[in-house]
Length: 596
Image 1 (tube, helix red, strand yellow):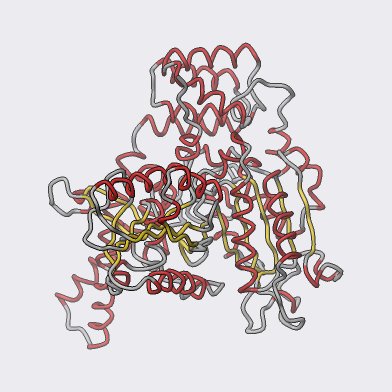
Image 2: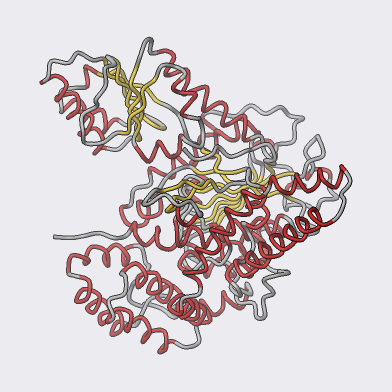
């Protein structure tokens, strides 16, 4: 199981949130007396691994199983299902119960829905004639801390559900998660939202506050000063670009899941044929914390310097007489050797991908598309990819980037590429193309693109980016500043008002409101500078801005936000909330559909 992240240095007391989630789960299990078998839906199991250690569950006499089509093999008479509220899972659980009955097994069944019960799910259990055999409850897990400054609401498909299926259920879930944070840390006085879904979340959140008010004392300054909600739809350019930070690249090529990455053990220098290894990646690893947000070019140099310095220390140790304190320092350095080895191995493995001519050509093309100055070259490059039958996801990423920056393609080109895609990858992908068109990601051009205006106004392309000593967030993509983070930069510095005209050029409405008892307080009009007392929480910490991405955020964007937070003159700590950590591949995959 992934190493549970250390939250001691979090600017917000996330530890108390996690401990509450642990207590809630333990209480559910303790209240069911005797030996029991806990059956967890696999994806949910991943989220739980960041909340509670398996060993702790086993102390309560619990057998653990992952939910699958196979009936549950256990001697326990009590079976507890812990599952998200998904209709297909109800059929699966019903088939388990029917199977037990046919074998004459007498068991007690419990279903705990995460994070809440859904009537449609219970209806299926009734149709399957097993509802009366079930004890039904809820496990209200709305927020999972992934790291000391990142919270996930664990909603994999939020973007596609809103954009394609018209299902806004996930927006209620996001609002509920934020409302739960407010019940621990006070009502957030300033709210800024951009995008259709974000404005809806803001509305639901305000309604929740009216219906179930969070009681915050009149004297206490809320721990979170401002909430910024941004729709993924507002900026689909950034996730389609290849991330160039260390953590971003690990995710692009190896997929980070619940704070760890699974690799062949040979990559990590362990010779065990065909064996997989889980490598935890979070801020508990001090070296990873230091290098995760750097551009990958720089990471290689940093690791080289550290290895050289260690080698020198070793030579000195063996050739000169050392004092006790020098010996102590050397031993301390040796303690970091496993981390060094781990990241040198990982970086070496990543270099096999990043040095490929095909990767460098793709980076070049992404920059050309973002520059928006060579339409024909980009069109021909994508056409050639389709003809060579390169992996469909790779094609879709560039195609989405190309279509979004051009506000769609002229009808002739749109029809042609659509036809070519279906010929090359099969007509069953008609559903994929329809999903992308519905979401506005690959469509016919109806109006002139305003990308050039937005790009210039927000300075999204930064020439001569110094990746080793960056002075701008553009270092995370070696020259492109993520649009989403530029918006956050402006929202924190001066609010939405000075940039109204630019916001109108981007998808969806925007809103800026004050909430709670601050609704009539003019001093909360903008985020003030650090000199103003309101920006300090009582114990002298900087106050906080919570940035929530509705539809997912990439590791490169998180790195850019950390960079902003560390800048001189920045009066705020930033905490990130997201429906899920995503990358271009993961987002494009959610639109894959097969018809027929």
